[in-house]
Image 1 (cartoon, rainbow, N blue to C red):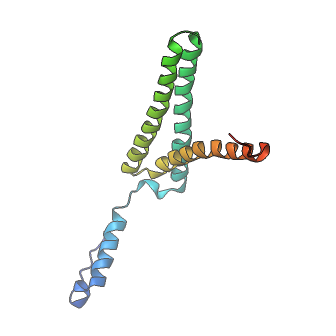
Image 2: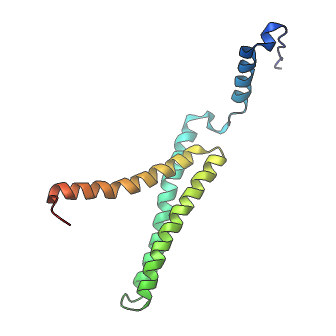
Image 3: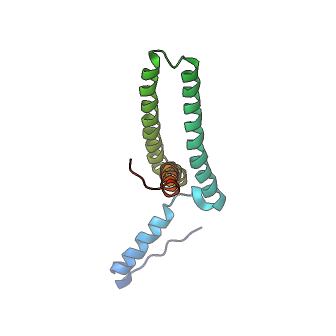
Length: 140
């Protein structure tokens, strides 16, 4: 059994003694989930690939609906607006899932999702920059 050591005198009342006790309390309240190294990697992969899979399935279903309807019909403009709404809703869902994962103390799921969003933002910028370099910076 763990014995509790009681400090008496100057040592217990000193600011240093109180600071050490607070640090011990904080260490005991840390989440126990990430004691193993592979659980961090698994959570990162869940966040990274989970968000990619959710986006792929959602856009895939949307593409099936679009190609099922004739593009020349009146519905094409409505579905164009819906596509914009779906992209915005997916981004909002990703933000909610990131916040939720941090609140549940599984922060590596949130970190994986953040990495996906950063990569999705950077790849088009890198392609645009490469095109500017390759084809020149002629006027727009």
